[in-house]
Amino acid sequence: MTRKGTLAAVLVSALLGCVGCSGNKGGGDSGTPDGVAGDLADGIPGDLPVDTVPDLPTAPDSVDVAPPDTATPELATPDLPPELDVGPCGPACPEGFCDGVTGVCFYCDEQTPCVGPGLWCKDSACVKTLCVPGSTDCPSFEVSAVCAEDGESWLESPCAEGTKCAQGACKEVVCTPGEQHCEQGLVAKCDPLGVGWMKFACPPGQGCFLDQCEPIRHNLLVIFDTSGSMSSMTSFDTVPCICASCQTKPFPQCEDPLCPRSKLGLSKFVFNKFFESEKISTVNIVLTHFPMRVKATNSPSCGSMFNPMAVGWYGLTLGESDWITGDDGSHVTEEGGWFDKYLYEVLSVPFPKSWDEDNFDDLKLWVNFNEEIGPTETTCQTKDDCPGGLCQNNGATKVCWLHSDPELRALSNTPLGKSMFYAGEIYRKQMTPNGKPCVTDADCANRNYHCSSKGVCKDPYAHCRANQILLFTDGVEEPPTTIGDFFNPRIQAKRFRYGLGCGGPEDCFDGAVCQGGVCQGYPLPNGGGGGYPMLAETPARLLDYEGNPIQIMTHVIDLSAGEGAANNMAIADDGGGTYYNPDELDPDELLAQMMKLLDIKQNLLDCMPEYEGEGETE
Image (cartoon, rainbow, N blue to C red; front, side, top):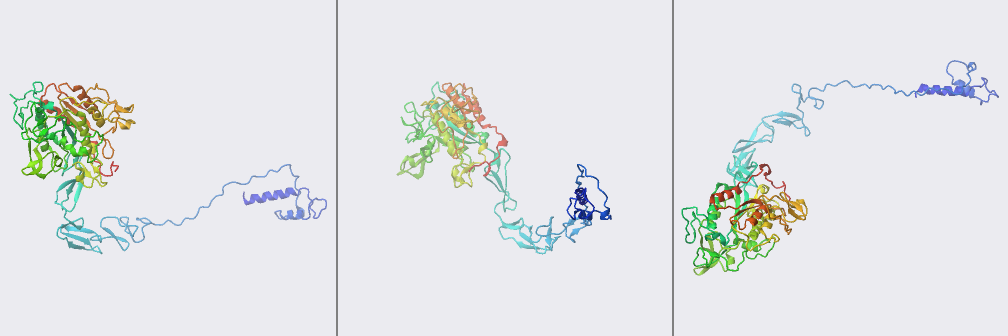
């Protein structure tokens, strides 16, 4: 409401209140208190005297009063200061620091540093001199230099002997330029001055293991059947002669290395070629056999029908176990126990410990049709002082006698299930020792693994490597087991690949599903027919030191001539691998089947290394 509207309303109300009043002051019949009319008259605008106030009309029943004025008042526009000329550098640039041509402000302080090569702040202005005070340079490899405080000169200092100037400072020479080695899968190359190492990663599918990038190697463990039937030369067991004639030979060859007569001889002939192939370098290989024990003898021979369990310096005593000495039936072997102590009874060639050399020459020694043993300088009291050898006299002193040229000899039963279990423990402890406690790399005893900063063994490429077992056999399991036995070969093959018992789908692998608390339903690559083993004993999977599953594929090459085909095929099915059972023992075809194990297809994009802090749960 405006000020004028308010006064008008008050005036109307006052006038209406005096309708019928007398113009005389003090009129007793007016009904109006004394002085009221005069007071109203005083409020009437204009120049009219009080006694000439006109008669007012009779008050109506109602009075229309104008509503208050609610219009928004107009706001006055404030006066703005005159527009300032800020110049090309903007208002933030203090006067005297603007380059009018380039529009660049040369003012600087602690919050506004100079931007641009060679510029530095001097007396609040960015300047460019010969150099920036305090900056460093290398005029030559033998001299370092620092810029003077005024920026107008360099202060040079010669490098001490054994140092070179690099990146503005004299640094110690620590390597030979161009020298290379590997650090946790990365290539470390000495820089051109020899004062530091440059590190870079290898392409996908490759890693640095010795001193350069090379293809990632997969893991292969061979179980070589050394049962007595492998060496039989009866008319039923003799293999087709691959020469004009095949003759026996005296000890230590026992048969012609180029013209073998037995399945053992033909197998060693093929394995010799396998170990000599170029593609063998694509795998890290371990060779095992059924239990063989070194026995003292004065007349080593090729064995005979009267003593078939003694060949060369190897033998088994009648009634002696076909298992490793001390085997107590445990499902997981303890550290330093019977398995570790007597592992040499089944292990021919262990996993390589370093990249300084391969173990291919050692592999060939076991299949070269030769055997030699001799005394060492290590004194002994019992055989246990000479793992894998003998303790006997050399002159007047008892010393250890060890093989300088060992050989695979056939003289045992066919413990397929136990041999599969032993293979799993070798994988867990030697071939993939992930999470094993360590202090140095040497504690891992595996060239793929290094001792991480968390004090456990790690392989940056473990997830890239295919783990395989080749079961090379000529018969059925003896003594036999059933698929209700934890140490049955099918049970072990399934445990390594798909898992046994399960609580949910996460406990089964590679197409297996969890049904009724057992992993089953997985593909049977060789035709199947044996059904799915339903044993759910523990441990249901082969686990590493950190409790992570180790998955292994099992392949079977079966020379049993159909005798053990059904069961041996089921081992390959439960292990997710291939099965080969030839009608004839053709060495070329046999070698071709073995070479397929080296042709491993891998998705290179899945093979980037995992270094510490990437995918680790240490």
